[in-house]
Image 1 (spheres, rainbow, N blue to C red):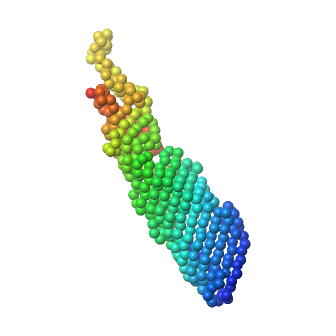
Image 2: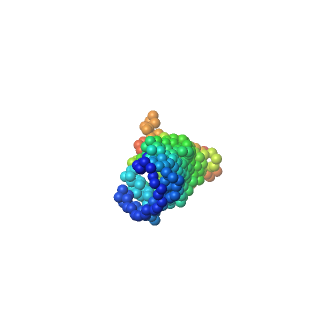
Image 3: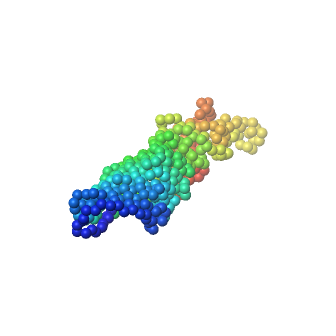
Length: 400
């Protein structure tokens, strides 16, 4: 960032103060700023300046100690306090039209200092965001308890900010229309062209944790695609994200999945694989679907051809597993999960399937006549409805 000015070859001793108000046409949402410039006592041939500006949302105090030319010396940002609600609303739309939906709370705090050479500022800025809230009402998400801290170097060549060390961003809670999470943590460095090199990222979700591999994210415009590792994530919350096949589920799920987001496309799920964790027994209950299982097995075992009439009916014993299968397909009987795997291939696998879900389970009842129920669901097309049972189903029943 470069700021320059010209000054006479020498400066007479000056002491005094100027004050007034100014309205910035470039920021029409900003209330007028009361400002003052104080010329403080200094050694011969030098100039000490204190510049202040303030209103109800902004407070800035800057000190400068200049040489006789006024183009070299030191500077110090003593106070830079900005109301996030006002400043985010003014600045965000300048980067992207869709950022106009962003609203915030809390305060941006800046301190720092450095040197002035040839009328240009160089140095370091310490930046914080305290008591933060970030919300997009149109996209339907909110980050609460937001905090940020980072140090940035001012480049003397141009208006570029680069990290002087790792930055940290945290949020206590994340709320969306589809899921909630908490304790978001991200650490990384800001590099050229508003790229953020993420070194570590994690978030607690559904009682478990999602950890992100190191990657580079675009901040302007905001675009990311990350590889996310899920550990001990609650199966009920996974089911809630994509209802349709299960009415209830208990247990934990593990695996890796690619997740992307952009303001244009929104949230996208990419390739990956998930499986039920062996650390805790998993139990599911199918969503009520009459005939889902029973249409695949006979209600009676027909030992004689139907042409034998009454005798054939007398010698057709009832299938003892049939009533139990009806209870399973109507969601009245729980299945203890033996395996539950989810494979995501957005580009399509060798058979053109973008997702395959396989469930193998047995009734919780110890004396059940049903040994195993196997359900495999294949989805071809967008992953928007992944995990929704009912498409290209393959079902098998193994009886005792």
